[in-house]
Image (cartoon, rainbow, N blue to C red; front, side, top):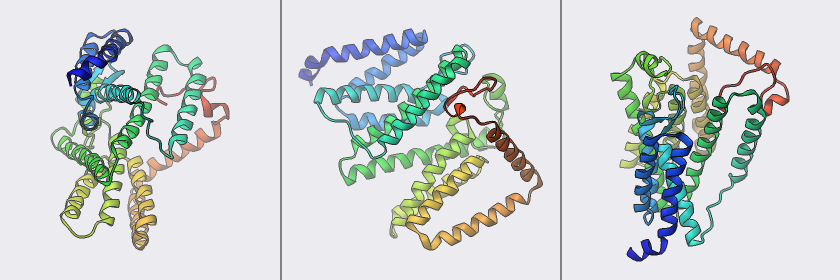
Amino acid sequence: MKNFWLKNWWYLAGLIFVLVIFGWLLYQNLQMAAILILITAVGLLLINKPRLFFYFSLFSILAGQLLRIPVTSDQNGALLLSDLILAVNLIVWLVDKIRRQERLPSSPINRWILIFIGFAVISLIFSSQYLVSGELLRASWYLARWMLYASFFYLALDQIRSRRDWNKVLTSVLVVGVLIAFLGLLQYTLFPDFSQMAAKYGWDPHMYRVLSVFFDPNYTGGFLAIILTLILSLYLNLKKGVAKIWLLLSLLVVLAALILTYSRSAYLTLAVMILVVFIFQARKLLLVFLALVLITTGVILSSEKVTERIQKRIEGLAKSISQLQLGSCLGLTPGKSLPTSL
């Protein structure tokens, strides 16, 4: 271990220096620099244990919006603890790969990730002339954050060398998902009214909806839809046993939390993903699933209030499509606005 530190002190010291300077100059925030130092120190201690660092980054997602560091005066721009931990993990991992002269893991979805990033960058460039500096910075950070979390896929891929490794990674992802669902149900029970948080910190004033650690029902619902689909897929493949019982219990917890998000986008995501699972893994249950979807849709549409909201959404979508121009596919057009997120 001593020889390791002596041989590699130069890039370790450089890594600390770059991170501290990056945090201080970019955000002008001493708290940010201190946290970066702490996380970097942890990263250096775990540099010889990349698997442990990977799981440390994975479970840091549980902190969600509970540990956020404002980087703008209006509190709208902030970094999450998981952002910082994952960034340090990625840098340490890349440096270690270079030191060992190892190739980065590859995947068939590489081209699609690059295509998406390319379109996003082009869109951001075209949009920059219509955005003020604060909006442009925020939009750029959304893209950077997406790329950061997309890189976590390759970190996970690098940990999988055997069937046992695959089972460990998948189990850890499912544990994080179930914990987020459980925390969401806990929040729904103890803190169902977010109106006070909206007044103090600018969050949306959601009431009686599962928000979990993300403080947003749509993000939480989308995340839980993915976790629930993974659980269902594993459940259909396993034979009888203790593992199948635990999967069933986990499925019920995640499903309850997802339903209580009242997120239509999450419901739609779940329906599409379950449809795909049934097509490839359980075609005998496909008709049952489609029947349940039709019955559920009929019950939902029987509500006059829900029907009115859906009608308004359809009208808004039709209006947006009618105003769509070719140039707006890759950015803004004069006279139109765009949210600061991509």
